Amino acid sequence: MSERNPAATWLVVVAMGSVFFIWGSTYLGIRYAIESMPPFLMAGGRFLIAGLALIAWQRALGAPWPTRIHWRSATIIGALMLLGGNGGVTWAESMDVPSSLAALMIASVSIWVVILNWLFFRGTRPSGRLAIGLGAGLFGVALLAGPADLLTGQEPVNPVGTTILLFAALSWAFGSLYSRQAELPANPLLGTGIEMLMGGVVLFVVGSAAGEWGQLDLGAVTARSWLAFAYLTVFGSLVAFTAYIWLLRNVPPARAASYAYVSPVVAMFLGWALANETITTRMLVAAAIIISSVVVITTYRDVQKPARSPELDLSPAASPAQSGK
Image 1: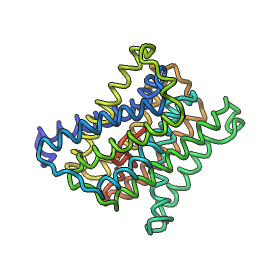
Image 2: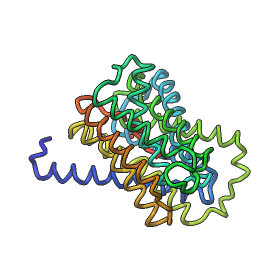
Image 3: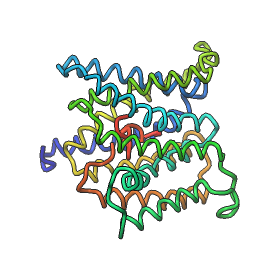
C-alpha cells in the first residue's frame, strides 16, 4: 500500500497516533488498575482475556491451530515478556514507583536489545555511532536509577522498585530477541494471542503463589480500577498491537519503531497531568539522554525489523505483547 495514497496516509497517521498514545498511556492505566487489584492477577487477567480474544478471532478467520512447539515457544516468550517484563512493571508500580519513571526505564529496552544481542545471540559488536548511543543510554539509566544525591539531591527513587524495573527491561529485551528465532505461528496475531494466553497463565501462577487471591475482593474493586483494567485489555493489548502489526507491514521499520521514544514522553505527560506525578530535573535529564539514545539505535537499525512492543512488541522491544509498558 503506497503512502502516496491519501487513504493510506490517513491510516498511517491513525495507526501511529493510536500506538503512540495507547502504549504511552498504559503505564498510568496500570497504576489505576492496581489501586484495588493485586498486581499479578490484574496483569494475568488482562492478558488471558486478550489472548483468548485474539485466538478466537484468528481461528474464526481460518488460522490453523498452533502446534505443540508453538505453545512451548509462546510459554517461554510469555514468561520473559509478560511475567518478567509487564509483570515487573506492574509489580514496581504497586510499590508506588511513578508511572512516568516506569515508562522511562522500559524505554531502555532498545538499549538492552542491542547489548544482549551482541553478548548472547551472536549479534554484531556495537561500534561507532551505535556504541556512542548505547553508552549515552546506559548513562541515562544510571542517572535515573542512581543514588538520591545525584543531580541536586532531589528525592530518592524507590531502590527496590527501580531494580525490578531494570530486570523487567532486561527480561523484555531477552524475550524479544528469543521471539525472533522461536518457532511460532506464521499468523502474527495468532502468535501474539497464544503468547498473551500463556503469559497470563504464568502471571496467574505467580499471583497465586504470592497469595494474591486472598487479597482480591471483587466487591472492593473501584470503578476506576475496572475501567483501567478494561482499557488495558481492549486498547493496550488488542487495538494498539493490531495497529502496530499493520504498521510493520506498511511503513519503514524505523518509523514503526518510533513509538519507543514517543510513548515515554506521552507517559510522562499523562502522569504529570492526570496523576499529579512530579517530574524532577533528574527525570527530565535522564529522559532526554535515554530517548536520544533510543532514537540513535532505532534509526541505526532502520534496515532491520524492529524489536516487537514495551507494551507489547510486547516490545522494543515489546514483541507480542510496553509496559511496561
